[in-house]
Every structure is written in structure tokens, then in C-alpha cells.
Length: 117
Length: 115
Image 1 (tube, chains in turn orange, brown):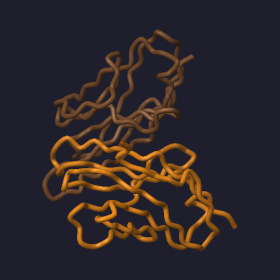
Image 2 (spheres, each protein chain N blue to C red):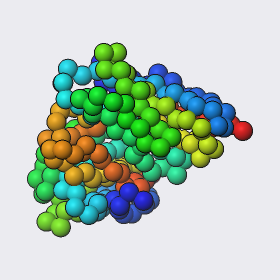
Image 3 (cartoon, each protein chain N blue to C red):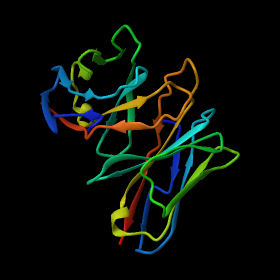
């Protein structure tokens, strides 16, 4: 079974609008971390935001926020006030287990976001 | 700039050959991870080293090997290369430990093309 599911292969959003990129996950481990990365066309992977499984509040980093719904096992990324530079591939990833142990990331298939004028 | 460096940026080689990819982690990070990104497989975890020791292994082929040196830089060796090994290879590093998020910061990647 897929551990990270991103059901939107592609999304369009108008400049200055908000957009939500979906991510659902599957794990039986009570301790895990959820990450979002951005991959522009240049290829590098840029860390955006992190949410821990025990965090009580949704994570926010500037224009990025993570809508964490633990019971539904979803961790959607919300980008507010979209900019042309936000056009990129976005990946959701999960680390299972506590920090300090083997910490591989499992990635979803990604969502390609295109910001239009 | 994540602080993780990878060399070379591009590598073109022939089937059957052997190549070495190099990674230097962020200052202070003890963990190094290798990932492969290909069109058909997506982003796949290969292997993790922590302070010189192998910590976790993923979908890494037997033709591939890695190591982390005392200065914490890491090398990924790919041998008997096949066309299907063409991919973008990422190195990431983190500072794992209690109280940290163990966020992995990625290098710019090495794009390998096997002809």
C-alpha cells in the first residue's frame, strides 16, 4: 500500500490566490514526521515545512501552512498569495519513527503546480 | 543554498562503467542520505549513514555501494551501469537527535546519464 498519496498530478492557480495541495499518509507508527519539499524546474529539492505527529498546532512558515488532520491522516500544504515563482513540483514526505534513529523519507509522487497571471 | 554540496552536477557515461558521486553534508550534520529520482520509480531512498556507520538501507542495488568518511563526506559508487540507472541522485543531510525535527536538507543533485 502507498504510504504517501498525492492525488493531484497537476494544479493550476492564479497569481495572488491561495492553493491547497493534498497529501494523505498511512502509518501505524505513533511517532512520525511529515515534510513538504518544492522542486523547481532546475531540479533541486527545497525544504518547505515540517509537522510532527505530536504537534498540537498546524505548522506555518511564511506563506506556507500545513493543514494537519491526524484522524484523517492528511497533511495538506496551503500556499497563500501564490507567486509565479511558486510554479514547481511539490512533494509530500514522511519519516516514521522518532528522531535519532534510521530516518529515511518516503515520498509521494508529487503535484505539479502552475501559477498563472 | 541548503549547505549540502554534491559533485559532479552532471555525469555522462556508458553502460558497464563505474562512477563515483560525492557529497559533503551541512556543517555539523552527522547523517547522510542518498536518494534516486527517476521518471518511473519516483524518489526512492537508497541508504543512510550516521557518523560513518550504515544506519538504514532502502532499495539499493547490489551494484551500488556507499560509504561515509571520517570527515563526514560520503560517496556513492555505481558500477556495471545500465541504461535504467540514468537518474537524478540526491544526497541529503540532517542533524538527528532528540528535540530536533531531523529535517533532511538536500544537495543540488547529480544527474547521471548512461548511454
